[in-house]
Length: 112
Image (tube, rainbow, N blue to C red; front, side, top):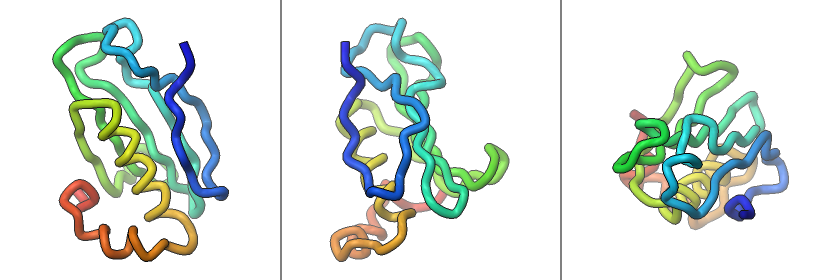
């Protein structure tokens, strides 16, 4: 099984990707995806509750360490998780695109 494809800005680095298109609880845990961004930011994707259905993907942006969380979003399906990660990666990267500036007010991108 291949990890999900994530389209990211060139300045983003995938630290690990264990995000699979499956509902098998064995693959749904707290360490699914981590992406390093400029300015010491990280996007983290986890599944809670771990190894359990039903649950939700939690996408968190933090700066430096976990205690410095800037945003957290919960979504129910993998496509929404991927879309949220891609938007947040673009938003927190250098040079926001026009579409993302307009979409920055979307409810899924509002800080927690």
